[in-house]
Length: 324
Image (tube, rainbow, N blue to C red; front, top):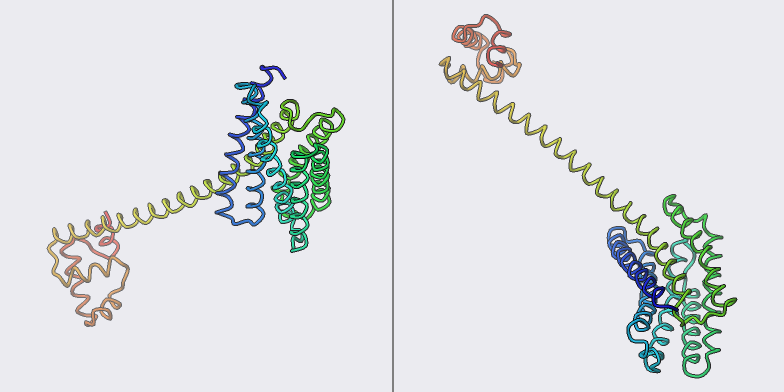
């Protein structure tokens, strides 16, 4: 591998980490809001996958900055050990996420089976590091066959997904996986590329990680934009309602002020002001007499005085005078 390709690869790793970290953060917030069970396993899967790439990026950085450091047996042993832990963890968390996502049965049996498979992979990987590298080849065959099985399982149970948007997302992710997976297997088996060597395998992995996260990030951003739009919609609705109420209240206050000023200028008595308020609200003379518990004749006299002081001849003129 030449240095130019190495630096290009390093830039791609940086882009992958930025996109991956953003996707993980949004996924955590999405989980806090929705409390979807499969999502927490998906977050762990993304984190492990990102950590696995981070390990390879560290090795790439060492190759570019301190090539001699790569020859250190301690560095290589530690690198292989962390890589083995990451891949064995993925063997458990990928099915744990996928089974719940597809609403398949995940009982004690499935839990134990994938835990055992994860442990077997880890043991074979360690034996490969300490004794014979052929053990590590067997471990990788187990890993990729397991991923292939899970891919087929997802394809067969694709119809179980009820949400149309999620179904569309899964379709895109499935197409990406169909394209990338054979390339990765081809590099490892046909071209006989060492999984630990920095090169074309890294390019395949990092592009897969970037595209996978871009799709999920797009979905999560769409979800949060929808929340913001709905929130703004409700806020605007509340503001409109509040403004309407405020306008009505102001109109009532202004009317009352107008009534008060006109009442004061006309010099009505307290009882006449009281009767006037009922007249302006649409009450008849008889209704006023019942409310105030006075005779109808008394009310008629007060109304006549109000007309006379206001300079009006009837109820319509009275209302118009105090409404202006």
